[in-house]
Image (cartoon, rainbow, N blue to C red):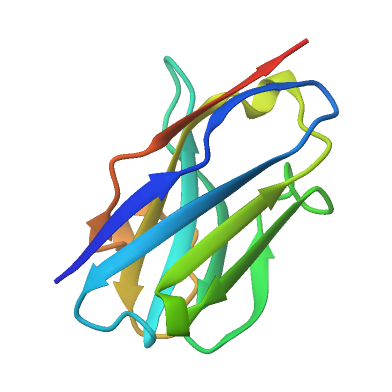
Length: 124
């Protein structure tokens, strides 16, 4: 199994930036799709971005398209989410998750393993 640990969350101002990291350990995850999800208080967990094990283009939720960029470095067992032009509505706990295969699912139910999350708070 793969273990995931997120880091890099914190407090940012509107218009600011944060970079989240997701560190993987255990079996190799280079063949797995990794996704980023977020959950705000009182709301359901929602899709943010996902990328195949081989890298390449990620797919993004419309709400973050053009502002967030996902990347991964399989040699370092790391996945990143660069978040720019942050808005108060980006405030949430952010999770990375993984699934076998190549389908970059936007459904949290399709992911097999999860990190514990990192809090992102954007002040207005």
